[in-house]
Image (cartoon, rainbow over all chains, first blue to last red; front, side, top):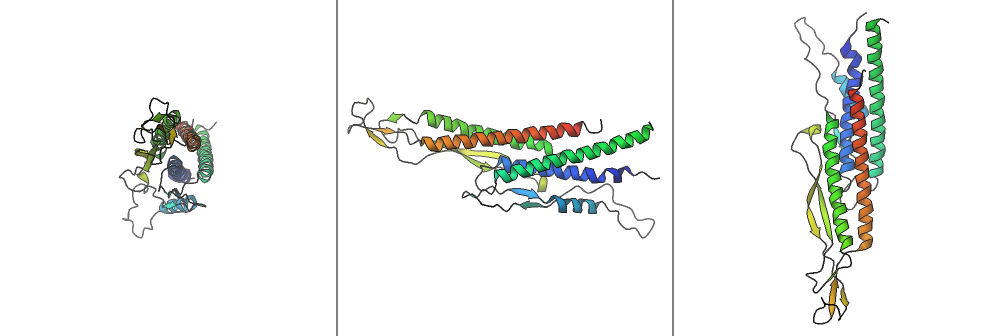
Amino acid sequence: MSLNLDKTFALPAAALQLRAQRTKLLAENLANADTPNYKARDIDFKSAMRQALGQQQPLRTTRPLHLQPPGHEPLNPKVLFRQPYAAALDGNSVESHVEQAAFAENAVSYQATLTFLGARIQGLMGALRGD
Amino acid sequence: MSLFKIFEVAGSAMSAQTLRLNTTASNLANAETVAGSPEQAYKARQPVFAAALKAQQGLQQTVPVQIKGIIESQAPNTPLYMPNHPEADADGYVYRSNVNPVEELVNMISASRSYQNNVEVMNTSKELLLQTLRLGS
């Protein structure tokens, strides 16, 4: 049996980083809810996650001397502008209720990912201790 | 860690909303003041917010709220005929402040709601950070 810690933690680690970045973006949207001409921004979590996991696929090696790139590339999801339902006259596209809902959803998902990661660590620790 | 930057962002928004509450308070306090000429009469003050883009690339940049300045309302000051008022001009008029109390009250509610929003954001981020720190224990 081979245990690859990188692989075990790759998914929740990438998810946590993306969730943290999304939390920051949504917090900026809420902070700038009264700023004229500010445009609300967000990331598409699903496609960002797919992109992040795609990055971690190993490169195909055709010769024994071929090397794998060291470490993983930093996550760099595409930041998109939100399409407002009813834009304000001052050019601000933040809709507080939409942002609040997205922020709450994102925070709960972050906590869920943390729980999954914690359970995985607990499981590994249990296996290591053997009790 | 992007969660740490939320404190800066939410903090800037909270100070901006505090300034908005402050100007509202001074506007409401001076709503009934009168002066001898339209130039001397109190003018309603409003802060101007702007998004402060930090010169960094991509997602690393933060967008806190910046206070551009405070503008004075250009609405006309209503003249009131009060010949016995010590401040009255030669024609017996005094000029009332151009504060619209209804507008100010709405402004106050909006500012306090925005402030609460940012407090919630900060609290949630703090919780998430603390839970991340406790991870694996």
